[in-house]
Length: 428
Image (cartoon, rainbow, N blue to C red; front, side, top):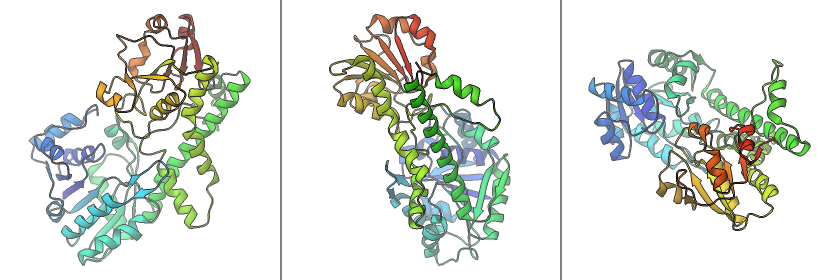
């Protein structure tokens, strides 16, 4: 079995390395020549992903993993084609299909009889069958007869890619029964996780979107609880912990907001699907509004303590949307920076994963924790492990009087011990 993986990004390269690690010949395709050259040398361009460096290096050394920019040729030489390229989406869910449709056109030009095409890119319900298959059939081949098509949503995450590939069940849904059968057979050979077949590609597409909306709605609910506790003078973490001793309660912890490529984006796919069917997903829509408003809510916690932020020096701890992952897509930190600047604050940003030039690209001043300018306050946005040992004494000496903990990550008593006012999300 020869496998072609199209898109060697943060998900595609680990997938290619996983398949090669099972002893299969894998060709990785990407339009970026630098990425292709790096993989060809056995070097991963993605840093900080456990196991990836060694898997890429060994797979290339063993002659099982190669890379190319010639997608049509690679498809023509492969039995299975896995597509994991972006469906570009803005913050409001407006979709740009140009990349994935362009790639699908390339696949159609190299498609062979008997090939299996798998989409792992998250898609609105129905897109595999209604949007991708017609493009693939430009090959002159008939889907379900001459080649087979499956949707199988990626369910992995930066920092735990291979762990999730081992542990999280793989969902497989084809455009027909034979496509599903072949998809299940493929994943049984390349993964160690349980494989779950669903009745159609549409069902598989919905699995990913339902899961994302479930999480988004429950984050919003936790945030609403936090706002209530903040107003009532209660500690939301104490209450959530006690509530979750009931096996029927699974309340999440609140925070400064939701970022990344998944939870803030994919709900809009289903909202669009529902709109086409005259179904109003009220909870999903409201959850998006609530979660998008959390950065402003967090900044306003600081305003309540300092009254006026105009001319104040505020340190933002963390640019990434998630702790220990170098990714800023829709990061709450970006919105926090914007709201602080709107209120006249001088914004300093520190993130151990980002150099000066990248931080300054977001319109903030670079902060070195070893050499800080005078400050008035700080907001922790990202739960990086480096912040577990934050030098609170130095922050106080630099002038910090208030810390707003947007992840409820810091030790409240320790912060207050250093003479700094602590405000968490839903905590006093």
